[in-house]
Every structure is written in structure tokens, then in C-alpha cells.
Length: 490
Image (cartoon, rainbow, N blue to C red; front, side, top):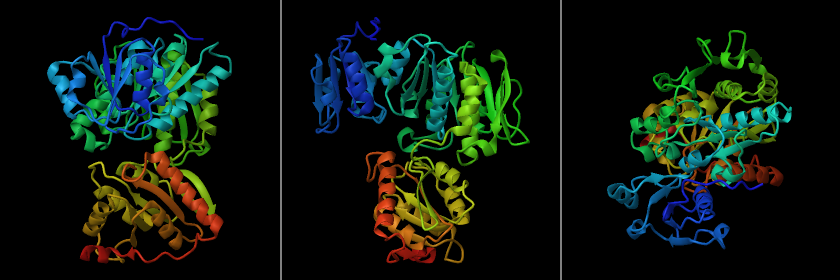
């Protein structure tokens, strides 16, 4: 049932929303439904705005962001993908026009406490785990008529649901650094899974990136909670007034926390919730890799703080199979397993994926670079990979680092350079043998050739399955195979 709730934006004269993708469209609709005059602007001229059809007071400026949009603008809202150094954003700052986004507006209008999660890696898996644990708690009848809302940077922009959310509901929200850099509010329960180099093409420096991530806890009070990674040097250095709960793969935290004990058991302790309990053994998790043990620990702590029963936490921890495009097995053909880890858009995530496998790995690496360091990832690729297949815009960048680190086939695995993902899959299939793993873990974004990482992962799975159906999975594709010594000579 729709709830009539007076919003703080009812008194605004007009607003401008930059970016007509998922977040921008949801926010424009939300504002227009409150009779706020909205101008929706996008750099593309051919965006689909049909979801706003029939709404009064919505105007459009498509094909650019002209500065005259600011002449009657009370607030400039930026969608997640909109850079903050655009001329219109810089001019808004000069004029003193407030900047905001859909996440900030949601925080201002949401009637229920928010559980927010961010991190360089693991935030989507952790967010989804928490949502499932709270849903299991609600399904058991322990939370009355409460509902669980999950979204934000994943799935549904939660701004669309504000009018249906009740004060007793659970709200679980993934937050990106792009959203956080503009925010001046923090959730009641916040989590940072880790902070490693990422999105430096957007933020410019590691310091700016850390500052954006820190906003998820920066505005908390001593009545709030922060769940932080004790094994991460950056999160260990954060200092806020909130109640701190640490999670760790290495040691038992003092006081409240979640940890992997010496017996391989996941445990969680939250004194305020009278909870000190074993969750499961690490072997009971169906998620691959140590990084996912950390995600499960973080999710267990967050869910316990929010009030989930230990039974709900245990049941989900032992049955959750993961989120699409995150080390997802998409096929097994002739004894070769094909994994889609398209979400790996940074070297750190590629490294985490490689560490999950003991089998020989044929790695598909490529996409668009985010101005991140590659030396450590290439060193691990050298140790862990049977073959390396490079594709996309940053193929030459990674190739140069490979050439710098090793000189010939004796020093490292063979390298294949391909023009597209399809060609890369053919090249990997040509050299794969029973017992091997073909792993799409690109280490770069998808924007050089795809709409997003999900489209890239779907395309990978489609190519693999098409090859298998056609019986071409073993067809030789060797025309582009080159050794590291050849790379050095180019």
C-alpha cells in the first residue's frame, strides 16, 4: 500500500538530474511523483526515457549537459557514473548549488534504519548474503510483518521503494565509492569489506578513493555500528565514534567480532545481541576462496547486529551458492570447467580468483583499465596460469608488464593476444585439456566493448555453450599464440 509521506523535497523549486541510466531514471521518477520540476540530462541523445512517460513537470536535455541547466537549479543530482569533474558540476560548485545523488536522497527520506555495505571487492556478495540471512529470519516468523529490502548499487535503486518501506523493515544497501563521495549521511549499520586500489581513473588518487569510502562511517554516532576488516590495513586505520565490530581470517578480535578460528570454524560474537556462536565450518561454505570466507564473516556480523537469529545466519551461510558473474561455473565440457568472474574489474579481484584454483588455469584477462597497478597481478599470473589470453583495450598494457617481468616461454606461461572476447574464448578452448579451468577474470571494466560486466559475462557463457553445442570446443585456434619473448620484441 502506498504511504503518504511528506518529503523534504516538496519545497524545492526545480532540480537537475544528470545521467538517464537506472539510478537517474529512478530518481527523476521519484522526484516527479512529488510534483518537483525535474530536468533530466544525459550526454547521449538516444536514451530510453519511456518509464517517465506521462509524468508532469519532467523536461529533458539530451545530447549534452548545457550550463544553462543551472540557471534555475536548486539541486544538481549526479547518477553514479557521472564524473564530478564535468564542466557543469564544477560550475555548480562555483555557484554554490548543492550536489546530491539518489543514495543521499534515499538516506534522507527512508523511514527505516539502513544497513549499508561498501568495499573494493566483496560488497555485492556480502550485501546479498545479508539480505538472504535477514529474509530467512523474517520467514521464520521472528520479525513479525517486517520486509527485507535489498538494492542500491546492485539491482533496484531503493529510492523507488521509499513509499512502501515501513519503520520496522530491514533495508540492506550496497554503496559504491561514486555514490559515497557526495554523501553527508551514514547508515545506522555500516560495513567496509576492504579497501584496495580501484577506480583511480575516476578518483584520481588513492587518498581521494579512501576518503569516498570512509563516508559510509564518517557521519555515524556512538549509537551506530561499523563492521570493519581487521586484516585490511586501511580499514584498521579508520577512526569514528561508532561501535566497532571486527571480522578477521587471521585472529579472534577483542570484544565483538566475527572470525575464522584455528579449527576452521566461522564464529560470531555480538554481546549486545546475546550472541556468541559457531556459524559453520569453512568446508560447509559453497562459495569458493578465502575472500568469500571473509564475506561470510562480515555478513554474519552484520546480520547478527541487525537482529537475525543464529539459525537464519547458519542456514544461509551453508547453502548460499553465490551471485552471478562472481566465480560462477557456466559449463563443463570434456573435463574442462569454464568460470565467469566478469565482476573482476580490478587486478586485486583477478588475484583473488586465481587463488581459488589448484587446477591449471587458462586466464582470460582484458577490458578497459582503471589506472591501477598491474605488477603484482602479473607476477601471480606467472605463477598460477597455464596460459594467458589477453583481449580488449588494455591487452597491450598488460602485455607490456608481462614483457617487463619475464623474457621467454621458459620464464612464464604462453600468452595469446586476441581482438575480442569471442576470439579469446576460442583461443582458450583450443589449448584447454581435461582437468583445466578456463577463467574469465578480466581485471578491467567491460566498457570498451559491453554495456556492463553482466553483459560481458553473459556473452562469455553464450560463446562457451555455443562452441560446446557445435562441437568446436577443441578446434585449434593458434594463429595469435605468441610467447613472452615475442612480446618483448614488439
